[in-house]
Length: 317
Ligand SMILES: Nc1ncnc2c1ncn2[C@@H]1O[C@H](COP(=O)(O)OP(=O)(O)O)[C@@H](O)[C@H]1O
Ligand SMILES: [Mg+2]
Image (tube, rainbow, N blue to C red; front, side, top):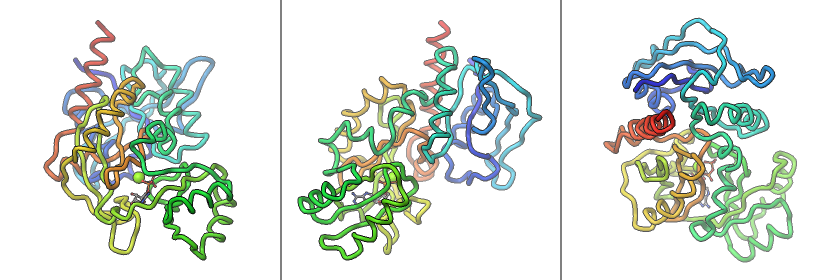
C-alpha cells in the first residue's frame, strides 16, 4: 500500500538533518514508496469548510546541504491526502492552536498524526499532571503565596515557563535564594500563563532520558547528559546524547501512560524522565529518532510508519 502523505512543518531548508526526527520520518516514508508533499503552517487557508494549502512535491536525501527538492506549489484541498504529518515545532501558542482547529476538520477521512485534537488538549507540561504518582512534586501557579508554600515544603525547586520548550528559561531556585524575588518579577512580566515549580532533581546531572513511545508502546530511548555548567539536558543546549536502557520504573511509566496515549491518537510521543520521575509528555513535534538510531537503537521511524500504514489499511477496509 502506498499513501499520499503531506507534511506540515517549519521551513525544511533550515533543519539540521542529522538530528531532525521529521526528516527521519520523511526518509522512511519515501523509502516505502509513499508520495510526499510539503507545506509550512502559514500556508493553510480555510475556504468555507475546505482546508487548502499550496503544497509542493518533496524529495528528500540524507545529504547535508543537499537534503531536499521541492516541486512547484499547487493548491490542493488537504482532505485529498491519506495522511498529514503534523510536525510543526513549538511555540505552542494561538497560532499553533489554530493549526489544530484547522487540521481537526480533515478527520476522520484523512489521518492526522498526531491527532490535532489530542495535541491541542495535551500541552506537554500539563497533560503529564494526569500522572502525579509518576512525577516529582509539581505545582503550576503564578501565585506568590502558593509558590512560597511549595518551596517551604520541597526545598530546592526548578522554575520554568508552562509552555516553554528547548530548555528556555529553566531556573534552579535554592531555599532562601536571593534571586527569587527578581526572578518572580521577571517571570510575572514575561510569561502570561502560570509557571511550573517542581522539586529539583539533583540526579539530572546523570541525564534526562527521552523515551519514545509509538502508539502507546516503548520504541526507543536516549539519555541526554547536561553540560557540566548547565542544568538543562536539551541537546540544543549542549546536552550529550548517550545510549541507554530502561529501568524497571521507566518500563512501568511506559505501561502506565501508554493506553492514554494510544486512546488519544498520540502515535508519536516523547516522554522525559529524570531519576525515574516523569517530567514531560511531548506530543507536538517530539524528537529523538535519529539520536536513537545513531546510538544503535531501534528504527523508530519504521515503527511509526508500520502503525500509520496499519491504521490506514483498517480504515480503508
Ligand atoms: N525538576 C527538575 N530537576 C532537575 N532538572 C530539571 C527539572 N526540570 C527540568 N530540568 C532540566 O531542565 C531541562 C529542560 O526542562 P524541561 O522541563 O524538559 O523543559 P523543556 O520543555 O524546555 O525541555 C531538562 O532537560 C533538565 O535538564
Ligand atoms: Mg524537555
